[in-house]
Length: 611
Image (cartoon, rainbow, N blue to C red):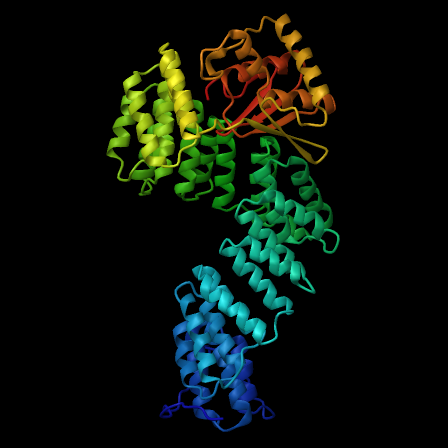
C-alpha cells in the first residue's frame, strides 16, 4: 500500500481553539488523529487534520491506510469535492473507500450521476469487488435519476455477485423500481425475498402510495401487521393512503395506535402530525384536523398549508384566511406558492372575488412569487363562476403560459350555468378538445347542457350521436361509503351490491318522505337527451350518492355521520335532495365530490349552494 500524497507541506500548527487533540504519552499519532476526527464538525478543521496526517504519519504504516479511510469518510459528509480530491490521492483504495465516495455521490443532489461513473470505474480497475454496501448506493443514484436501464444492469450485477438474497440489496432494488414507477417489478423483488425486514415493507408501501395505489398499500399494510409492528415511516405512508381513499376509520385507528403504542417523540413528530392533519381534512373531519393542528408543539410551513387547504376544501373560506393571517403576522412564516393555492381556492369555493384578486396581487407584488398554472386556474374559475366571464377570458389571454384543459373546462362549465352565448361555449369546447387530445365525456356533457338551456334539442341529440360515433362513454358516477372499516362502492343504477334489495326499499322510503315535504325534481342535469320526465326522474333517483346515502341510513348507527366520496361533481338535484334528507332523517351527511366537501345538516349545506 502507498499513498500518493505529493510533496509534503510545511509543518502546520493547529490553533488551540480549532479542535481539541489529546496528547497523552501513550497515544500514537494515528490514535490522536482518529480521536480528533470524531470531534470534527467543519471542513476547515478536517483540512488541518489532513495536513497533520501528512506530516506526522508514514504512508507505509499499516494504520495510515485505515486513517485515510476515516478521513475520506468524514470529508464525504463535509465537502464532496475535497473528498474526491482525497480519494484520487489514494492508491489501490479498498471497497470501503469506493463505497464511501459512491455513497457521497448518491447523497449529493449535484453529483448523483457520478455514482454510476464511479461504480463503473471500480469494475474496470477490478482490484476490489463490489459488496452488499456498494449496490444500494449505486441504486439510490439510479432511482434519483430515473435511470432504469442502468439500474436493471446493476440488479443483474448484484445477482451475479451473489447478493440476490441480501435484504439490504433487495430493499434498495424495491426502492429503485418503485421510484421509477415499475411497481410490478418492485413487488416481484419483494415477493421473492427469502427474508424481509420492516424496511422492505415500508419501501414497497411508500411506492404504492407515491403512485396512488392506495388500496394496494392498505392490503399490504394488513399483511405486514402479521409480522411487524408499524414504525413512523409505515404510519406516515398509511395516513397518506387513508387520505387518498377517505378511509376515516383506519386513519383514526392509526392515530389511536400512535398515541397508545408509539414513542412520545414520534407522537409529536411534525411530519406525522402533518400527515394526520391532511388525513382528517381529506376524510371529512375538519374538526379533528384542527384539533391535531392546534395541539402540535411545533409546526412548519407544511402544517399551515395543510390547514389552510383543509379549511378551503370544506368551504370555510373565512377560517382559511384567518389561518393565513395568523401564519404570516403572528408566527412569521413566509408563504410559498402552495400557501396561495390554498388561499385562492378558499376564495373560489366561497365566491369571494375581490378577496381573490387581492391575494393574487399580494402573491405577485408582496412576496414576488411567480404565478403558476394552478394559481391562474383558481382565479379564472373564481371569476367565471361568479359571472365575470369576460374578465376571466381576458386573464386567460394574458397568461404567460398556455392554458390547459382544466381552465377551458372551468370556463365552459361557467358558461353552461350562466346561460352564456352558445357560440362562446362552442369555442370553449373546441379549446378543451385541442388541449386535452384524448378527451373524456365531460366536455360533451357540458356542451349538451348549453344546448339544452337554449332549448336546441337537435344539437343535444347531435352531441349524444357524436359521443357514440367516437366511442366516448359518459363517465359513470361512483360513490363509496365506509362502514366498519370496509369501503362499499356503488355506481349509478347499481344492482350488484349484496344488499341491493334493501337499498332500493330504503330509496322508496326516502322518496315518500321527500314527497311529504314538497320535493320537486330538478331535471337540468339529467340525461342529455329530451326524455320524458318519468324517465329523467327515475335516472336521478339512481345517482350513486343516493344509493350510498340509502345504505348509510340502513347500516350506520343513529347519530353517526354518513361520509360519502364521489368521483364526479354533485348535481343540482342530488344536492337539494341531500339537504332535505339531512333534515327529514336528522342525520349529518358529508360528501366529498370532485371539487370540494359538502357538509349537509338540518337542511343546509356548508357550501351555501355555491359550488
